[in-house]
Image (tube, rainbow, N blue to C red; front, side, top):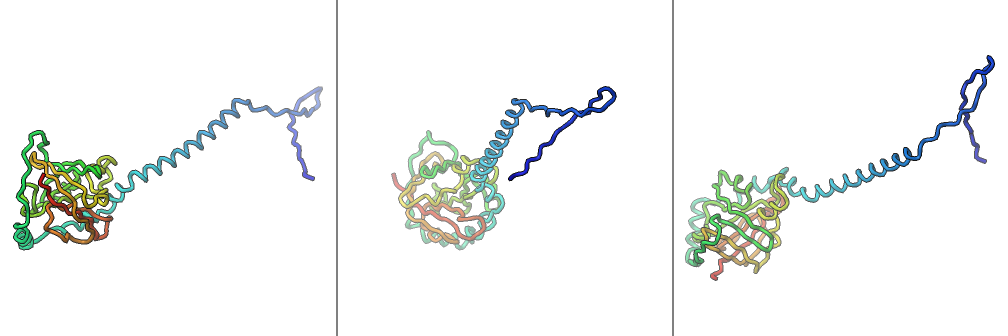
Length: 246
């Protein structure tokens, strides 16, 4: 049998010179106080739940930014994979000059005066930044960089090479990353098209080959798109495209 202990609380009262112990009934807590306490506990639990959900959402949305900010393997290794010597560049120009098209699309004053890259399939719509090898990181912070010392859409003796970060920077928003980086470049497949508005002429290219490795393997392409696979490894993602005469 369970033992029950009952506690009594007494008041000391004086009556006729004697001390009388009178039972004291504990004061009851008002129902409103109990109800408020319960509500506060529920609200506290809900706040904790929403805080956890918020943290998870932030991790999902900003993990690529944090990763790109913490480790920038692409930038550190970029030159060693793309910078050719003068003689190598001349050999590429000479060996491919005869096979390259001299086609130029018509001038269109309605096109933007800034040079832009548009890849509708993966949501890229960004201005093409210009910079030398010594200052290429400033261009990559803006989005897509046209690798200097190679070709341009209007000067096709060498391939046009466009490079961009895949994961970007902590300060980039999700929308900015989608439009200005090559995060979704792996989704671009053979047969997909890429547009470049260059000096108010629209150049349309078609992807003919996909590649992944530590260096460019096909300099006969008219356009080469280039980004990293991960942050610190040497692997790169490449897309090779031909200029369409349309």
